[in-house]
Amino acid sequence: MRALHSEKPARTTSVLAVPPYDVVALVLQGGGALGAYQAGVYEGLHEAGIRPNWLAGISIGALNAAVIAGSPEAERVERLRAFWETICTLHADWPANDDLMGAWANLPFAFAFRPVQNAAAAIRALMMGQPGFFKPRFPPPLLSPFSGDAATSFYDTTPLKTTLERFIDFDRLNSGEVRVSVAAVNIRNANLVYFDTAERELRPEHFMASGALPPGFPAVEIDGEYYWDGGMVSNTPLTRVLSSEPRRDTLTFQVDLWSAKGRLPYDLRDVWSRQKDIQYSSRTRAITSHMMQMQKMRQALQQVIDKLPEAAKRDPEVTKIADLASHRATNIIHLIYQSKSFEGHSKDYEFGPDAMREHWQSGLDDIRRTLADPGCLDRPASGVGVTHDVHRAERVR
Image (cartoon, rainbow, N blue to C red; front, side, top):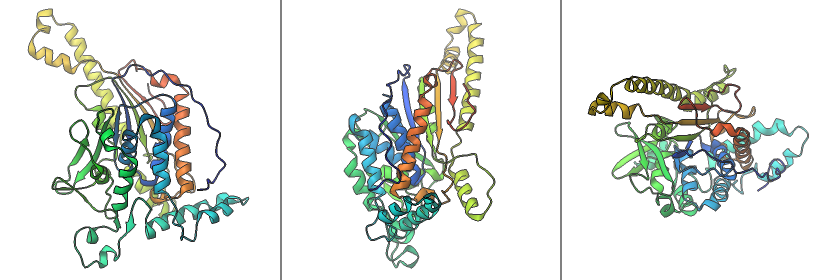
């Protein structure tokens, strides 16, 4: 496949010394084709010697987590790249093929063609599906004489199961080497359910359920229950990591694909794009604000306990309170994908190879810029630290 821009020279990043956190978590939001940004972030972490021991994801984030955890450590980046090259492959008989895009890219005003190129990728995915990922149903569900998946979804995701089995060693994924948590919503009761290797063995169906966004994709049956994409309820599993018991010192890389902040839309297409940003963006700031309040409460409890007589401290009820007040460090490094000016409301299903490589490179660039400040990994003195996206000037420590 041809790259839109010339390949950047390989960059060697120094291996960083990570403070002794009990948990190093990588939290991956859902966002379809934008998920290549997360793969780029992981490449930057890998080259810096940072090895997450807990991967939590939803939708495309769950698929990325599966490829990482289900690959030998030395092959994780290569497996991720092969996975993304597979699901972003162009159809050979599609008129707007890579050769045509290559001709456009050599024109002096090539940038003006990018909205057209991205729109073509989105139309191709809608009409023809994506090799190794999903294929359109015929007849379409509105005309289907059958019930079940054929009548309730536009695409068949059988190819995805084959792709997952090709790139993921599920025995390794379930070995306990890395904890994996992915979320889906139970259709019957609307509850968000986490499938977690700490609790059960995960197979391809668990990851497909996490990304089964209706009405495009069909529900996935697991143990007699049916599930849809977890992003319908919550598009980030950050709370799963931060609320786990017992509480432990945790360094978390939260990688979001939708920005909560944005400008006022100026046309209907911009409205659709902003609607998706708002609908699927994480509430990371609200979660971390709540954590900071809880930390202040714990510190206040500890100060009260410190003033008690020794005999009172040994009281069983006081002991329970002291456990709640115990100090644990939490550092959250928050990266957020920044949409390109030529990307519209279809950016999450623009599965073109050029867009994929640009998303990947954006993630790699952002995590490199973040890690260029080695202090971002330090244990926060206050117990909770948040390093926000490198595109924002604000930083809270």
